[in-house]
Length: 522
Image (cartoon, rainbow, N blue to C red; front, side, top):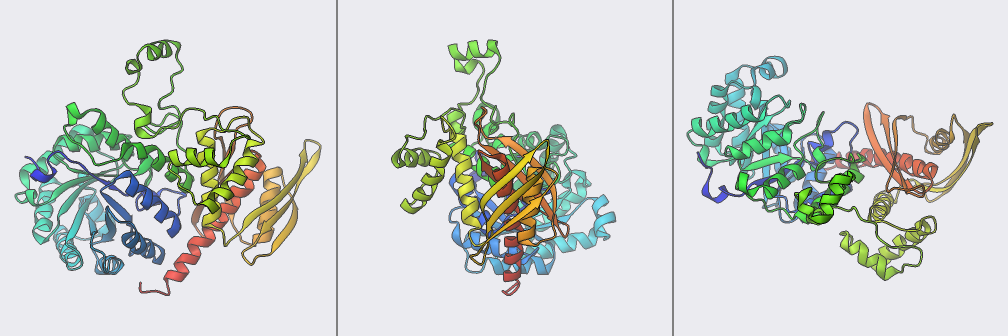
């Protein structure tokens, strides 16, 4: 029942944050943002990065191509339907790349075949085999996914897997596409695959679980217990609908309970926190406070009984060391008297290595923040660096200049906003609104001239206290697509303006990269 001896005690970590994670409603990344995340995933030590779906759009093609050429270490893969056009696009994206994989998928369950594919089992089987064979003509490493495998008739699934392995698949992925399975059921399915697919020892068994019933991580771990040796998931559990298995949960379960699972990973655990925060910042999805492993409260103890026991012996209520996963929960005594050296040293510890020019830019912002806060915490610094990256990523687009707002319960709110425009000019516009933020957004709309709809507005405090840095998340919609933006500032109205402009810039950048890629080879 065992997998190949080379993978007996090692679980391959397959990250699909840049593909399935980007399918989260309201997500949308530029190529540069995907590259930043891919480089961080490399530091984290994931084995496989699913960089995108090369055949889905020119922008995704370009992201897959650049990540495959610029991120060295992990296997880089592109998803492809079992159709020639998708597979050929992936093959073109990987031209000249050695460490590449094409990930071919097709529906397998009768409910999908009847209502989505509208094809019979024999046709789907032929398409699966042909897709793997065509992918094999481009790369040696081919993964095959049977979509909705957990609701597929087992004997048909076994036959399909045997056929695609014979055609050259080196990894076969068993999916719980709609999050329907339970740990016992899913573990039994993996065991059934091992016992009933004659050539299964020629491929690695992978799993891809969704979280519709909150069991994605549990199902993935049950699969490991039963012989699977690759787990697919996303940082922070992002993904379609309720998301995918949260990789940080699966990784830390395996690392914390080696007595139970008996397997290891190649993950650099201390980069888990950095990876989580970067993904949260770029995607614009805040991490819930009590999220396992990476939440702000994950290692905080408030109960008096817990605190008493913890102070006597931390293992009474702590099964992992916060430092081991890069958790940031302590206040850092940096303030307005701190210098460049202290700031550089602390940012280095947080994973940011800056050039002298970058440090000078950040230091100015740091000093402005220090003038409004007595202490600067690690989370303040994380927010500051996220804001800096947002400015760099969109430095050829719109940038918030000055903001002046008049409001109160006895006057109609009005705002005067100055934006630095892509043509190098600055424009100042005044507008009225139902509140200060509405007035600011209306002024920005007048400058930008886009017909967009603000669909979501959320404010969170980066740290505790009345002087906390505020972080605003905004989502805007245009032509059926949703774009997120984030901004942080000690003034929540300014943070809102930054977030709104960031969302607009992302909308423009994604549109521009698709138009640019359309002139290329796709």
